[in-house]
Length: 195
Image (cartoon, rainbow, N blue to C red; front, side, top):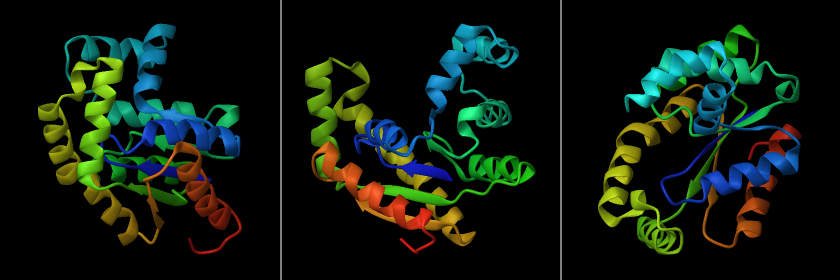
């Protein structure tokens, strides 16, 4: 089962992706982690991505799709994977769909974490305070939120337009509570029910 996990900045998406993937015994495919791993391992894809990343530019969609395709071909991903951080735009969603279609694998479900913007802002500022992350300032949050709403949220429409199951999950609560909500959705999808 190929699952896409969406959520705005501060929604807990990264934390949930790791926990849920572990619970279902599928890999958590984080594009940022894959890129760093490919570069560190000195793979052909990593060598291609390294200078782009070093220059501060975004890795092109075509290269990202090849990196994800390479990851999904590994034995542990044969029964599925949970993608976190990709696709971020409609163009990336279309590229991902085409790549998956070549392997006869569709996106099975899209899970969107819903958290009110004020709660997201509080989480981000709290995280900045606790972890000292410079990218978690109020201004940075505003920019990231604007980018999410303009570029990433429309990807949900892309998938609903293609008939892919979309489940909105309440992202408010402790980690275990939100994990249970996501797991309930994925259990229903796995059993063929509509979430």
